[in-house]
Image (cartoon, rainbow, N blue to C red; front, top):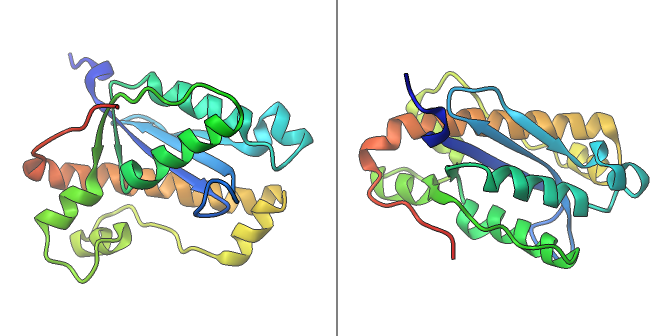
Length: 184
């Protein structure tokens, strides 16, 4: 029997802005390999229900869930998701993420393939994966940022699709994985 605790978990976060000092985290998904997706949303936190701009409780929940993983796999997570999460944690006076092992497939895909660009959707389409990323709809993102629960459902759906695609891409890229990063 496999020890599921030693398998990777796929992680993606969705934010209101590309800069952590102007934006906040809307949601995040963690999908342990072969398991259902765990979703975290700002409107399901006590703080987020009262103040839709307050992502402190969400950031802590995401940090704790990620730290509970043996290894995480992301796509541009080293340069974006983890840095953003740590920025928001620091903003709220919280301890930053003490990263587990981390594999960022953006770098692996970049060196494994000769594609027109290195976006996750390009890799997904090139590989002909069953799971499909959803389209980014700026209007839905803006409404979610303003507190619309229905629009946040759309953003969460996008995040869920991303970790599903990430898991499939990981299976294709395993032969190209040369290194895994540790925190710090």
